[in-house]
Amino acid sequence: TTATKMTMIGSIGAYADSMWAAIIDPQTGSYVGSPARIVAGSFKITTTIPSPTVYVLMVGNPQEQATLKYYNCFLTNEPTSVQVADNQKDLIISTGANAMAFQALLNQMGGEFDQLNQLTKMKESAGTFGYSADSIAKAREQVLAQLQQKIPAYLKQHGNSIVAPFLLIVVWPMNFPLATLETWINMIPAAAMENQYGASLAEMVKVEKMLGYGQLAPVFTQNNPEGKPVS
Image (cartoon, rainbow, N blue to C red; front, side, top):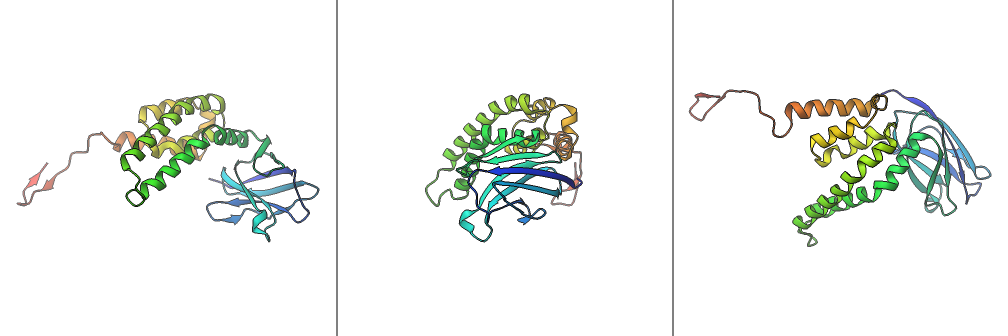
């Protein structure tokens, strides 16, 4: 992937002159570019991002931890305009198709992803706090079934966005049938697959078909305990 320049313009309802806005790379925990001071309720950030993906918008006073708010947002090279509601709980995207597509993803499926994260934590603690592994597995199946119903509708609405293949990368490890994943991939226009996520999906499908579960293993020869070759 290559670095790309982006601009974010934002406004915030409740503000003070001591507040700042900044883009954070969640992989490194560091600022992407320099923080921008919020002046009269507005800010503008122009910086170079390493690649199109999810970043974190931080709003508040870095010197006062209690004032800081964080918002996930999908940034590309397109100009993006955001508004932080007066209660500072909701991030509203007014321009930026990919940022809007990601916000729609959070609105439509964020609850299911939160549930899956919680179930993973419960699974790790199974037996310690009385969690039943069977009940956790059943709950996970129910959440995955909900996602499986929601994903096609989302792809129909936002298939032209880079967020569409990004979503399928996220759900790939959840063990949906390969045929289902291929159906979803085919719902995404070719132009929206011309990015790192689309390339990764194509490679993952290729590898899965070649080496995936249920495929015949290649012919090989191995010596048995007596030292005789066995095919």
